[in-house]
Image (cartoon, rainbow, N blue to C red; front, side, top):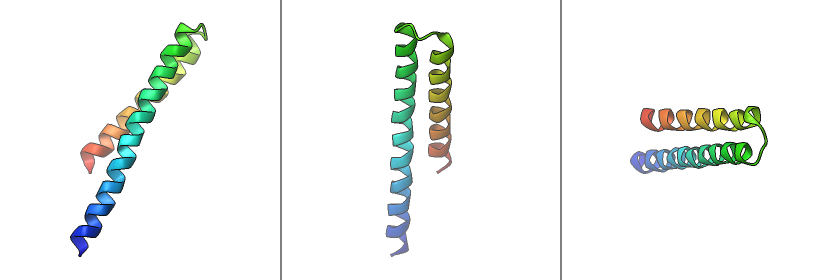
Length: 65
């Protein structure tokens, strides 16, 4: 019984990590789109740095679990 509970909890956290990777990809794409649309390098850098931070955290948490 405890194996099923652990499996369900592990699956839930895996979904959170995958959602984090999707959000990171969205931030990276928005940063690139902002730069190409003329939003300036600072706004694009904020999007790219935010996307990379979320991506790194998601991957690290995925590896640790």
